[in-house]
Length: 75
Image 1 (tube, rainbow, N blue to C red):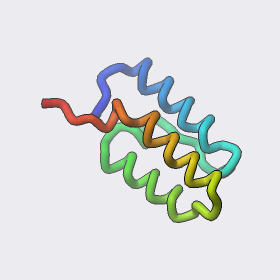
Image 2: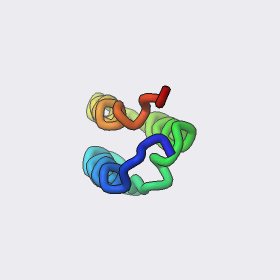
Image 3: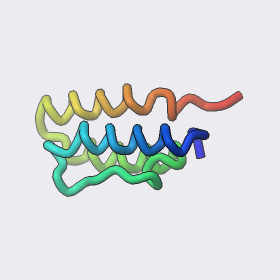
Image 4: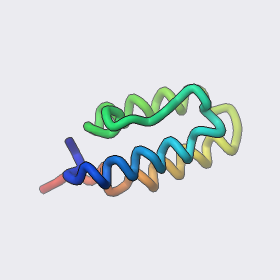
């Protein structure tokens, strides 16, 4: 898991779902999507494959900003 706090994971999961829910109604971000960098990349790639407008790209950018702390590797 690349983030220690279960509470923080839950908050980021909810915020992520909120960010994409209007554009990708069929997707709900869950904890498993944010457990590893690989799972986050998989979700992001699936969303990017269906990005067809500027709002989609802006939502993906917002996701990256939201996930920034999660994606930092521990030394």
